[in-house]
Amino acid sequence: MAVTAAAAAAATTAPQLGPPGQADESQLGELLIARLRDAMLGLGEPAQSDDAQRLAAELAHAQRDYRTGGYASLAVRLPRLLSTAHAATTPDYLLLSRGYLLATLLLIKLDEQQLGWMAADRARQLANASGDAVAIAESSRQLAVLARKAGWHDQALNLALTAADVPELRAAGAPGEALRGLLIQSAAYTGARQGDPDGMRELTSEAAAIASGLGAGASHVVVGGFSTATIQLHLVSAENSAGDPSRALAAAESIDPTALPSAERRARLYMDMAHAHNKWGHRDACIAGLLAAERCAPQETHARPAVRALVSGLLLSGRTTPDLRGLATRVGALRA
Image (cartoon, rainbow, N blue to C red; front, side, top):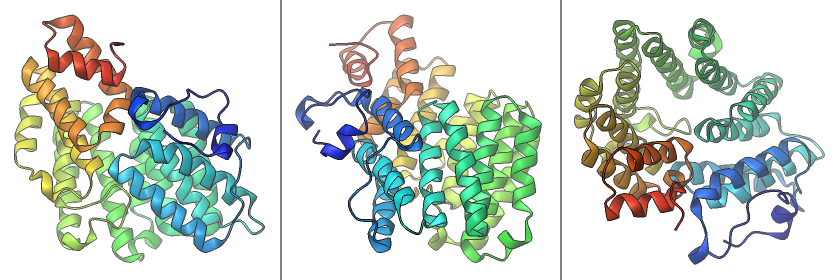
């Protein structure tokens, strides 16, 4: 894949990818992590222009790349955006905060918790400096996710539910209501991880009521989307975490994939279904789910460590079909 000279200079220790036909997409996650790390350390190469409109357009493009699973583009665009925005004569705190929030989302997906904490903390500080209630709430949500992943469940619940009750967020219109719903969703997922499925379902119902009140037009007011369909998608993950794959699959079966707002969300549905089938011992259905996720967002599917780990487990636990062998090669679990 072609990269600019500036991006290449910012990633001298990163894995290098060749032209599109030769690229190993399983390395895209490592490449993205390395370039984000360098940008966050001040080693990235800013673009020549820091025009405010250009930066806003670059952020919008990076967010679109996230929704479509375009990791190759993100590996160039997002680190360069952060470096350029930091080098601007008058830094735009809100734009920087949103850039770091996007970086946090990616680092969480890529299981890079240390850099994720760093990005989330910067996002919170920059959001506070901007005074934007939605950005402040989103930074709290990402910190809650990281706290949950660290096993700090009480703190994760406190972060999410406290942020959801901030008056400024309630006054922020549809984006604020969507963030309230996402924060409550996050708390629900933490409940599932704590072994409280009833509490998880109660909080999920509360988030669903917010989504229903917003209507279908609100699905894109936040990067990942928020709607009744994404609430149901969240429930699939939560039931998986609560240890009930049958409920997870039942929740998944009620989702129309075309109602989900992005390729990233559709891939998440099929990944979650694959995990549920794996827990239930449905080997062929698990592989089918992973292949469906790959069709939705191939670069993201190939780059994610969670997918690689699942495929590696499948290689060890049963027969290796041509479909599984091909997938294993593409995600880096089996070198050709």
